[in-house]
Length: 133
Image 1 (cartoon, rainbow, N blue to C red):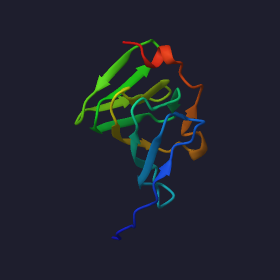
Image 2: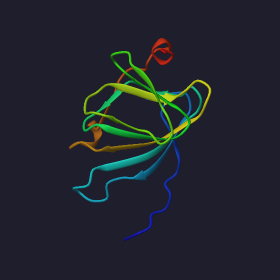
Image 3: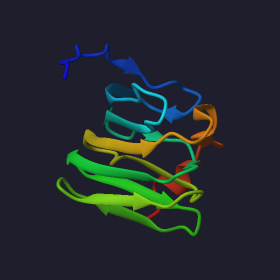
Image 4: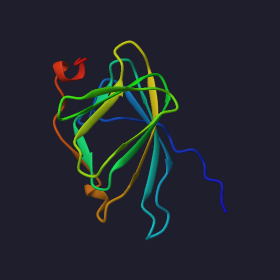
C-alpha cells in the first residue's frame, strides 16, 4: 500500500474544452494490466467539452452544480449532484456546466489497448447545440 501525493491541477486544453476547465488526476494505471483512470473535473459557468467518445465507455458522477450532457440525437439532459451517467463505448457526447453555475464531476474510464485512442476528440459544439433546451 502507498499514499500518493496530489498531482498538480491542470487546465483543460482549448482544443478539447470551451471555457475554463480544471482537471485533477485521482487514479491512473500503475501496472501493465491496469486501465482505470479517474479525474475530478471542474467547469466554470458555460464551460463544456467538445464532442467526443470513449473506446471503452465513460462514467461521470456529478459532485457539485448541475451538469448538462448532450448526445448526437439532440438530447440534452440535466444531471444533479449525486447522480451518475454512463456513456457506452463509441457514443459521441459532450458535457459541461450550465451557463450560470460551476459544475464538478468525477470522470471515470478505462484506457483502451492503446491509451492514445481511449478518447476520440471531435469538433467543438456550436452555441445552438449547447443552449438547446
